[in-house]
Image (cartoon, rainbow, N blue to C red):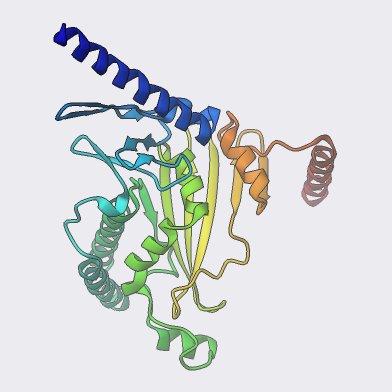
Amino acid sequence: MKTKYKILIIVACIVIFGAYAIIISYAQGPDDIFNIAMIFYFPGIMMQLIVNEGNGIICVDACGPCSSWGPYHVLVNGTCVLPDQIPKSKSLEQYSSEIAQINEKSKKYHLIDDVQKFNASKKLMQKTLKEIISNYMGLEIGHVELLEGYYPFQNATFWEKRFDLEPLSVCDFEQKIPLHMTIISQTENFKMFTKKYAPYKLELSIQDERTHQSNVHYGLIATNDKNQRASTYFHINSCTGEITDKEPYFLHCFDEDSDYRFVTFSHDDIISSYSNDHFCKIELDPWRQSLYDYSKTIQQKQRQLERE
């Protein structure tokens, strides 16, 4: 008889906690119900089920459900954790020192025009940046773009003299890149973008734009196998470490085959694109769609005139 009661109690616990998880998932939003994993507690045992929807690993732990728009979670040794909870092989300070050393070597090889050694040091920089992004942002980046003219990163004095800038108006930033990464990862713009595009091929672009508000440009580009791209960006002041973007959100959609292109800073537009089934497409109301179609017609006519 006692055994039956124990079984009934266990079944009741499963039903109660299962119902609780479902209610929580609906509170997060019905679209996220399949993202929520249920946790069942047995005497001395906790069984955690992790659900991988394909666009990010979402979990429920003892603290409650992870937010569907929260930081991107990663699976480490069977445990769903935040990027800042991942055991790091190196600290931010170590990465900062390493980046500075690699950059100095790149400047040296660039100055003496040793192409082979310069390319090797550039590849090492890209590899190190990928490692930082993986460890501190929870993202796997396929490529880090360091454009010619922006790399190697020159010191502040170089920019002051070249562009006749005010002293101390720009600062060295290469050692601050790891810190910049963590600042970016805490923004809602980053969280929303990576929520949808983490499973796709990702590229990071770093551009030295210190001539404009002492900015460092960080661009994230996602690409699928249909020649479609989605991108966002972040600008951080090289001296203060503050994000200088006037608008907190940005999304650029581009389809090479259909020539579809749309740029928006609107939070509602961006949410619309992230929540629909398209890779990157802002769904417009009829009036805005007519304006968009008209602008495309004008652009096509201008191109025809330029070719004639």
